[in-house]
Picture (cartoon, one colour):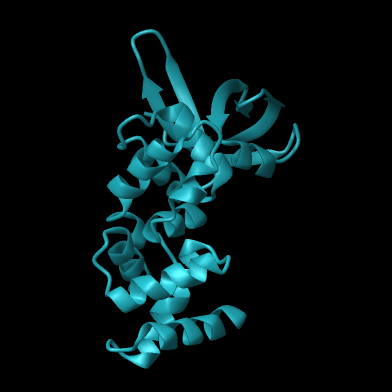
Length: 205
């Protein structure tokens, strides 16, 4: 099984690159983001590889990092997500942003991917929410609060404060992060008005 290829860029296709490895040209399918980051023809490149073996074909998928390849695998554990959709998601969101979006239950960010509707985005967020925090850079407390809000388990004052900030035009993830920080400084029994006020101060920073 091929796990990594190191060679020279021979040429580009619409969604793949031909990588010349000591005279052998490998066709490697990549996300648009990965293709844009690779050098021009003749330049050296190293790609982490995921090998698909089917009865009628062998297909190689290439990634700039092992983490991107891991997300390619994780995405395909979600019902209705195949290799094409997984690459499309990674073309829209780099691994770090994808992890943060899932950790914060930000379905809208995932749904920005062409070909990924709200239902598929919701499945991605729902089925990978327990795995995303390991890759995410967001505060675990914020991720936990975002999950509680999504599951309708958050304290009423917290939910109302987030809803108020969203109504003011802030995104759900930003509002949840601001209220989480406000709640941490104001205490568990803080009222909605105080959380809104402190949340706005956080958003203004």
